[in-house]
Image 1 (cartoon, helix red, strand yellow):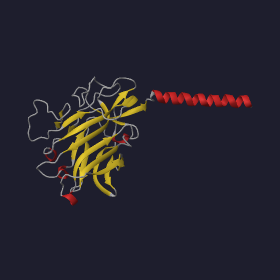
Image 2 (spheres, helix red, strand yellow):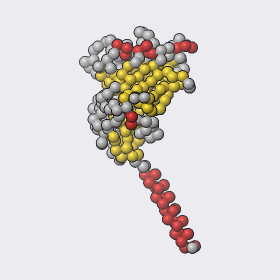
Image 3 (cartoon, rainbow, N blue to C red):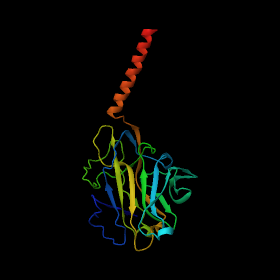
Image 4 (spheres, rainbow, N blue to C red):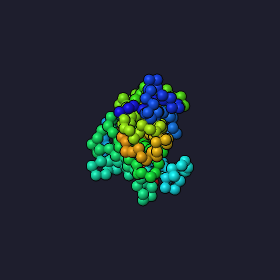
Length: 261
């Protein structure tokens, strides 16, 4: 098993990682476009508890363009039960192109997800989306492992989250020959505390082609990422104002009705 190299901004390998045969894959933190506030974090999550999470993959259609760079196609699915496991069938229309699986009773902290892809199509990205609307799934990375681009302040552990885990991929010959990156984006904060940049709603793995052949030949492989759940979305101040206005309207209507009775 090998740990993915951490990076600040672009893919900058840490000193001491010298094995040239291994993938020079980096983990990057990003502001993203949205910030989600929760009142708490459930840090021990099983495969059966992530219903609603969306996973998508982009790929080259090798049957039509011989795996040459071009317009990427998308296969996607929503996390649900499949027999004794939970996971996603990655579909493009009625065609299944890949799967992501983990055991129903498997704790996602320090345990393996399995990704497999149909031969003949060259996958490029694998994206996990959680947060509001997607099962409130969130992803917890170790607090002090470097920040992303733009420059972020890694203040430490988000309140009520676990200590987090570095993204890790199983040391397997199928995955040693491609490079890529793993980007955590759209950070999560606990109530009104400042962002710690260790918990996010989106994770995306980006792989580049290698001289050894199409990436579809390099699956299945297994990877780890600490997966949590956000608990109770905290209403924004504008939401409180709307609630107050609504209640005032109800009371006002009731008072007028009593006066005319």
